[in-house]
Amino acid sequence: MNRFAIIVCVFLSFVMNGQEIALLKYSGGGDWYVNPTSLPNLIQFCNANIHTTIKPKNAVVEPSSPDLFSYPFVHMTGHGNVVFSDSDVINLRKYMTSGGFLHIDDNYGMDLFIRKEIKKLFPDNELLEIPTNHPIFQKPYPFPSGIPKIHEHDGKRPQAFGIFIENRLVLLYTYETDLGDGWEVEEVHNDPLEVREKALKMGANILNYIFNN
Image (cartoon, rainbow, N blue to C red; front, top):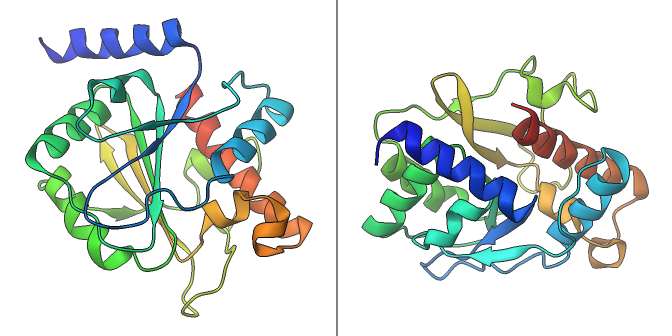
């Protein structure tokens, strides 16, 4: 199947299944299941505030599964080791080059492992820091300084990195920000309302970018 046909199939899958997003269940021993309330809360926020129609409960999908192509947005998080098999790499790369979007959010401790796995996915593409004037930081909520800081870990500045294919952002890696923790229900981390709202608004920008670009 040529690339155009794959893109058409992915697009039709998104339309036929409605807007639905998923959490990536990866191998390697990392806690892929952490932050169980994150995506449901983000979905609720986006449906209420930016008029998305995402199904209220997120799915769980494995990297090598054909079901991956049913979701325009797949979120990945955790604290530890990540290993993508050869079949994972092939499927994930085809997914992203065919219209899908992968968001990797380092929940603290993933960075050491995930960078080499990203390199396996796209050995010929550099993981670039996303400039603050990129559309993902502009609307519907402005973030003039780029990715916001949600949780403090090592005193480093928050950064957003991306893989671009033909000028389209297909993989977003957020580091030293911990957006997923900010999406969780209040009692999990006891973050103040303004911090949780900042995280949710940035999440809304990510989904807005995916559904409108």
